[in-house]
Image 1: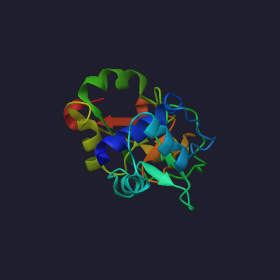
Image 2: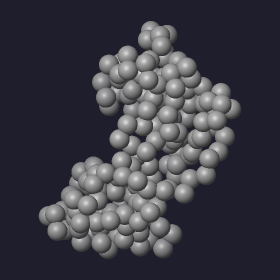
Image 3: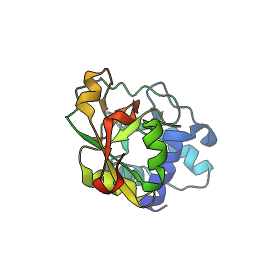
Image 4: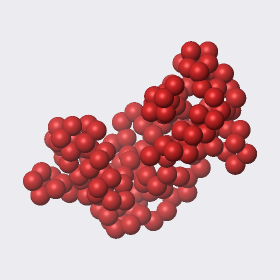
Length: 183
């Protein structure tokens, strides 16, 4: 299995549908590497431990983590299944960024950013990363999140193991779009 295909499969299994592979994540989202490899093999995905380690180490978004002893694996964020990643709320920088497609702006203007089927809204520390995220969904737009202001108003922020900022929601009044796409 190619690394990109394996990464997508791992995201599906570890973030969204472990039960489709006969797996159950523990409360923190971990699953045994041995069980995962068996489950992938049962679904006709031939993956070696070395391939799995390579995908974890080289994934450009650092989506996955191995436990310190290398016996367990989990996704760093993006779950639609309930897990407790053990993240501690921290003070965010003044501004964070969210990349999306222009077709979603009307809904965002009305409702702000919501986690939808996931546990958190994902935010980036820089506009370049946010634009790349938005481009995956269509014509990109970068929203500036007044994170410090939202934090002072009671919003909780977390920083995942791969540097993605997480929060439950961002009300519209804490968002600004690029000049060409006024909120």
